[in-house]
Length: 397
Ligand SMILES: Cc1ncc(COP(=O)(O)O)c(C=O)c1O
Image 1 (tube, rainbow, N blue to C red):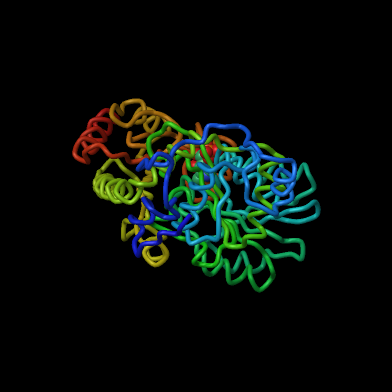
Image 2: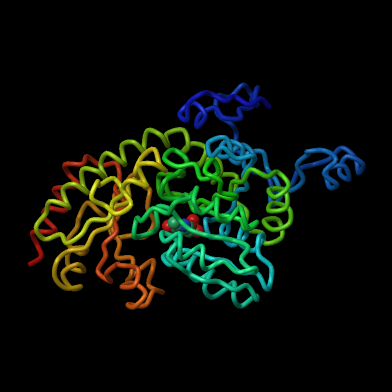
């Protein structure tokens, strides 16, 4: 195998870590749909089991299609390697459990994707791991929050669904002085717009279900890190034993998705910017949350930390919760569904759907409203998307 590393993301997303000669001289890599791999002798098997050779054993531990995806994503994120999981949550739970032991503490941002919030706030404490949620956009509050038990800081940036940006380098500087690991969920930005490892993070996690897959046809997760010893431990000490392994077919679809990631992200972003600007100027819209808008609170940090602003847009409408519910029900092109990052534009009501674990007090404390509407802006023509919002906004008082 050779490492074909171009000077550009687009080249690496197609060629990064490329097999020199593929079976049957195929242009595309085959899918290795096999549970187990055979050995010519017991000695060969023993060498593989003791990691004296790199021979494949069993797909829950390793598989060439999974390996290629892991290497390609590691190139794109600037990591030393990656581990593929059956879902974003499988990746996040394995990473947090691999870094935390009973008695340790994780500090996490006060707003997280609903299942991540449950994991951090409910599941980890049941195993003796303390968790505290705080506003990580406030670095002085973070500075005051560390305790000798703090071992991990965990957050998404941009945050789902508030779209706030968290300062990765500053947090990593504070963490490093204290030997604390920083884990960043890079799902919304993708490595095309943001590379947390280069800003000092220790581990990057992804719901690859979203932009990396890009077509709404897989559920998948990935973790990327620099340290090869940590990656070996994550794969063979956690993934292999917890068992949340990705299917080789899913890995193949993700490799296909990665080839067009740059192209899609640029177009997604242009559409999102047009929509955010349109919503910002609409008299029935109260507030638009999009890092690409110069008036958005995190805009300058986003411009410094990211090379693009992504395509997730949240907003609130003036009036009651009922009006925001009616607006969601009136959209036609934006389909009502969870998930994001697909070609199709999607709409959801986070605090009625993906984030329903948050109490009204927590929502208000985060500066948000229970009526917040979240858009995943897809790849349809932006004029059609704006027209859909126009007709839905016209339908409310
Ligand atoms: C930011 C973020 N992280 C993680 C996840 C979980 O990923 P998965 O659904 O692939 O388990 C999601 C799902 O929506 C998400 O939005």
